Amino acid sequence: MATDLVSTEPATGREIWHGQSGNVDETVERARVAMRSWAREPLGRRIELMRRFANQVRKHSETFAELIARETGKPLWEARTEVEAVIGKVEISVTAYAERTGQKKLNSALQGTAALRHKPHGVMAVLGPYNFPAHLPNGHIIPALIAGNVVIFKPSEKTPAVGEFLTRCFHEAKVPEDVIQCIHGGVEVGQGLVEHWMVDGVLFTGSARAGIAINRKLATDPGKIVALEMGGNNPIVMLDTPKIEDAAATIIQSAFTTAGQRCTAARRLIVVDSMFDKIVPAVKEMAEKLIVDEPFADPQPFMGCVIDNGTADLLSESFVALMSRGGRPIMHMKRPDESLPFLSPSILDATDIHERPDIELFGPLLQVIRVPDFEEAIKEANNTRYGLSASLIGGQPEDFETFWSEIRAGIVNWNRPTNGASSAAPFGGVGLSGNHRPAAFYAADYCAYPVASNEMEQPRATIGVGLRDE
Image 1 (cartoon, rainbow, N blue to C red):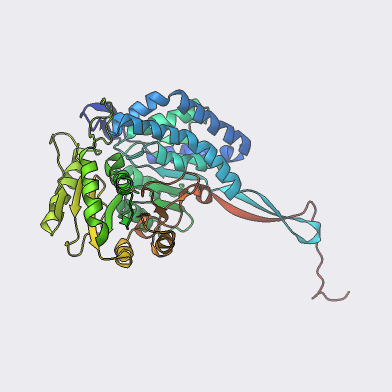
Image 2 (cartoon, rainbow, N blue to C red):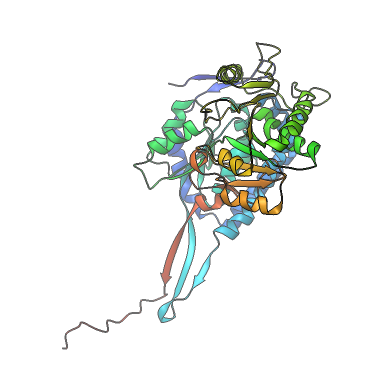
């Protein structure tokens, strides 16, 4: 039975969307029927339709950005950058598909042909997150469609309106409606897609807990492709540098952009003794100046609210819990209105917390950890089961070479924020952050599988040994 769903604007509490949960079986059956004809469309035609999609998004860009801002609570300026990323994903994916899955002719015996080509998997379930409800699922959808897969997209139940708008742009571009379908619902709908025997792949972006559950559920189904992009307890390591203001700005960008609701956000600032009294006050002073407000405020805020009151409650409780375990507040987490999920940036000295919890606190909470030297900084940075992103601030080229070599992460930056990643590069992590199937430029790898062929126009063969004489 369908369940009524409602989405509200986190910044105001006003209803923005209502609808019903979808029927998984019916949706998958439609996708299965559409699969063969879409896979047989010439590659050039599929690419043409993706470019039409980009034009539709461009046509509706301001309306789309306003919707993203309203449903997520992020500032309008940031929602606009998300729309631009949706548009830019098309050409990046076209290039990636050609580079990562191109056809090859190989040497073959008897003047035949040996070839390498790629096939689509079939029906792909894309499970999207709420923090980038258009850009991140689109990073799976575009490569999957180019490769010839059909897609069933389940947006986060916290951002269904954005998911529906994104899907509608594909349909306006004349991508057949059964080739890209949007299905709404909560955990039960997501589980139904993951487990469905006619779904050939699951492409997921979200929490480690949900990703582990998907991985466990599909452990006995090796024929189903699974790409998991999960979170991180990401470190940013601070060494000596004269650029204190620049370093502080880099740390602020890493920790508090999108109200800390990025999988690549810095959760831990690890500082060597010589820099502690220089960088921590500078970060605090800059953080205190950040504007936190609703998406359309003037002047535009640096960050908006977190996604909902439940998330704000959990983060507030986590800040208090860390203090109770020995954390020293540098900048308290404040919540001006208990009825709305606005939180101030918060900083806590976690150096003296025994057995610091290795969890992803998905919001504007930065833990500072003081260490004696670089060796201990790397050890502390690697003191996590996650491994998505890490950044080194300061130091010399040989320090970064050591950092790059020893740190366990899929994204390793120097004097750049932890959340600075290029769409023209792979995006993914290790440990609890992913399953070695990075997205972004490498999404083409999990959207098609390689097929080797040996071919001749007519059969031609002889048996040279092992036959009786007549």
